[in-house]
Image (cartoon, rainbow, N blue to C red):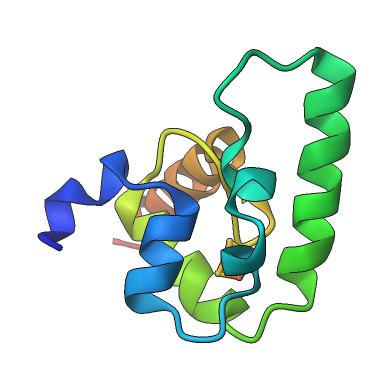
Length: 100
Ligand code: SF4
């Protein structure tokens, strides 16, 4: 995998390639979402279960570092949606700018 290809990979793909012991390998659709459109309440329930799986994942810390760097556009990574990760990365970048 070339690093810059990461944004087109699913959570399951990256976990399989990089994160030994990743719990999302057992049910990738839980983290990536189904191939069909989900109802909002269905999506929210799926994301909540994915967050619970992440909370007990042995690769949580490495996954979070990876996700903050790769900036995925979908999926649940280290207990965060892609939108939440973008906000975290922006906040981190902003706080680093304040220190410099
Ligand atoms: S923290 Fe979550 S998304 Fe990351 S590898 Fe573990 S189960 Fe998968």
